Amino acid sequence: MLLMNVFMGEKIAGLNILPSDKTLFDFQIEFIKFFKKMGYKVILKKHPEDKFELPERLKNMSGVEIMGGYVEEQMAKVDLICFDFFSSAFKTIVMSDIPILFFDFGWADFSIEIRRELITRIAILEGGYDEYNALNVKWDSVSNKIKSANDRARKNADVFLERFYGMVEK
Image 1 (cartoon, rainbow, N blue to C red):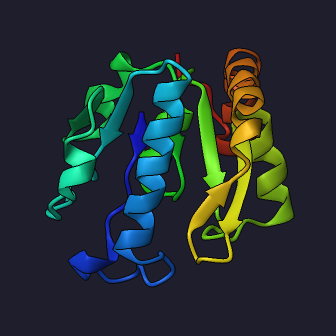
Image 2 (image 1 turned 60 degrees about the vertical axis):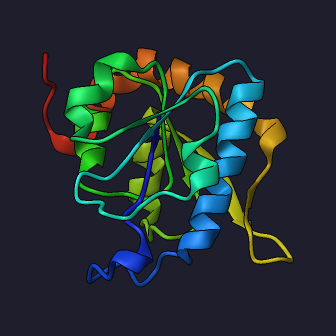
């Protein structure tokens, strides 16, 4: 499951750090193509407040399911959650034992201490912009990052919750 951002075109305050809607859509299409090639069923989870109409070429890609609603309603259906922007859904996700892969494009400004804790629970894949101003990641690193996300979810979920939030939910 890829958790989708709210898009700039929706004019919601506080999202000025995000790239253009076209840039996000292009990355989502690359994400879908890559994960489908790896044999995954891809679910795009729209933001619950999203009123933006997805581009036809994204909606019409075969083997892609688009879900609305809240992440809590969809988590039981997935075995990996990917996202690229920290939002209110993060706490819900990180409190589960579902593996998490974060595509870090530099939109979240973490302190060294927070990042040190995060990497005990989630796998982080650094990304950036290429020469055409498109979002890009090292796709050949994704398989290893997924394995890392699985290992960290299995081994460190409770430890992370205790250290980061001071609690363990059962």
